[in-house]
Length: 363
Image (cartoon, rainbow, N blue to C red; front, top):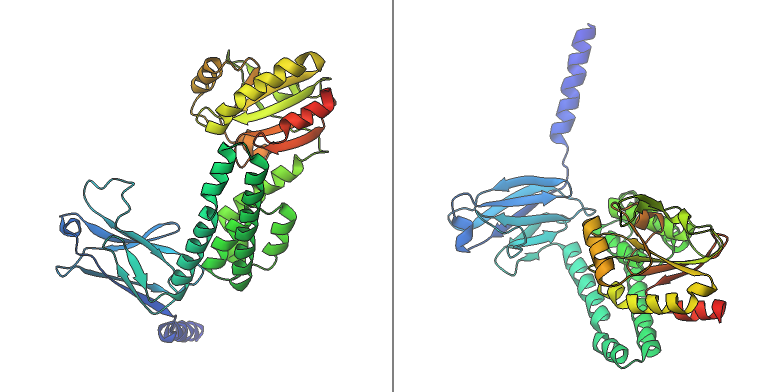
């Protein structure tokens, strides 16, 4: 009797699953480029974790995919053909599977129709891009002319416009893929308190997103290494390959100016002459400069650059992300001024304000 009951229950469950109607999307696409018909060419449907499905293009140049409607995700349709360069994105387009019927034209430039959220994301990205480049020429011209304060004022106003537009968009889309994109852009000019307050209004998939978690980690680290906090340790190697730590210099009775830099960073290279000037002016008064190399390919590259650029101060090479993660470094050069007792006095993104801060201390 018990076996019969379990069998009936199982059949009932199967019947329920067969009659349930999960909303589904169908992508119908076309591509007519000759590359689509080469032997071995396939069109892929790709999700966050990799390929979901693939198919060959029909003789008429069509293809199709099906899946569950999901306004929280973005999928990619990509044509892969023999000998395709990995950076060749001519036959690639992303979309949100938020409607039952979606059409993809994979011919360059690829387009998507029938997906309201995809249209909204494209509009958002275009608006943010327009805002970013709105005064780009003016900012560049003012900077080249030495009008740094005016350039910075325009740049800050531009960032504020982007931030407010992103906030408005996020608050209208806290539970979909557009909301995630807007939130990530909003984070760029928001502190950790603002971010966490906004995150309370976000859907779970946004809160748990890998990129969002990375931003939170970076912002929290930056918050923990702001003025008033004690410096955090950094370890690496010196030019001889011997172990070295920031604590070998910081908290030892002198001011320490820590410069996070990389050999390929133009602004970092430009900053070297000013760092050399600071050393010449203030070393005898109690200033030590320590370079922390981040994001370079090897110690050899780091120290060859230091030698070529005559960086005549201590340099710590760090091979992993620990140093930049510890200090929440988003961009370089980032400079941190540490007091003789090991307290962080100032934090700078770029060179602006460094000279003035040192002059107040030593002059």
